[in-house]
Length: 330
Image (cartoon, rainbow, N blue to C red):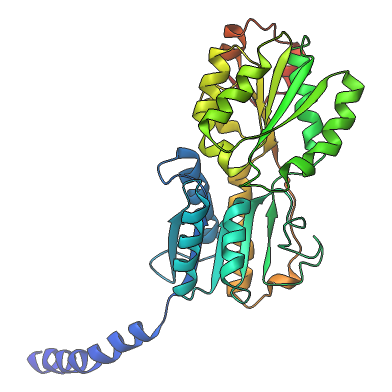
C-alpha cells in the first residue's frame, strides 16, 4: 500500500510541472470591447451582460478559454480614441464596438484586426462597410436602425399627441455624423403627409439640449424626436427631465429612456442585438473573415410606453398605443 502511494506521489510530482506548462501554453483567445456609454449606465451593463451570455452560448467563457477586455467611452470622442488605442495595443483576436463613434475610433486604429459592431444605424455612410451584403474589409456587424423607422417615430408621436404641429429631431453631429441626413428624407416625407413642420436640432452640449426644448414650447403644438445616438443616450436623463419640466411630448429610440421617465419609444431590442453579435465574434474566432459576414439588421422591435408620464402631460392615450406596446409602465 505504501509502495503504491509512493509511486503515485512520485508520478504526480513528475507530471505536475508538465501539466502546469501545458495549461500555461493553452493561450486564451482575446476579445476587446469598446462601449460608448458610461460604465455605471445600467443599460450599458445590460448590453455587455447580453454579449457575455451570447459568448457562453457558443462555448466561450471569460477567464477560461477567452479573455474579454472592456473599455468605456462615456460619450466622449477623445476618450473613445484613447480607449481604442489601448485595446488595439493588447493585440486582441477580435474587437466588439458599441455604436458609431466607438466603431470609428477602432477603425482609425486598425485595418487588420477584425471588428464587429453593434448598434450602428448607417454602416455604409461613415465607410465602415462597402455594402451590407459584402462588407469588404475588417469590419462587419449588427445595424440597429433602418431609416424607414424614423417615419414611425413621427407617426406614433402625433398619434399620442394629435395636437403636434412642429417637431424637432435631436441628434449629435459629433457622435453620429450622418444621423441627420440618414433620417431626414423619411421624416420630411412623413411630416408633409401629416402636415407637421420638421426641424433639425443638432446638439453638442447640455445647454443646447435646454435651448432646443425651450424653443419647441414657445408656441403650442411642439414635439420632440430623440435620435438614438451615443450623445443623446448618455444625456438622456437631462432630456427626459427637461422635457417633463416643459410638458413636451417626446419619443425615443431606446426603451431605457421610457423606463426612466420618458413618454414613448420604438426601436430594436438592443440587448438581443448585442447577444446576437456574439455569434459573429464566435465565427471570427473560429476562422471566418469579417468581409464574408454580411451586416445583420434587427429582427426584434419593441414599443415601450410610460402611462404615468402620459397622464402628467395630460394626454389621452389611444387604445391603439396600448395594444401595440410591448411594455407599459404605470
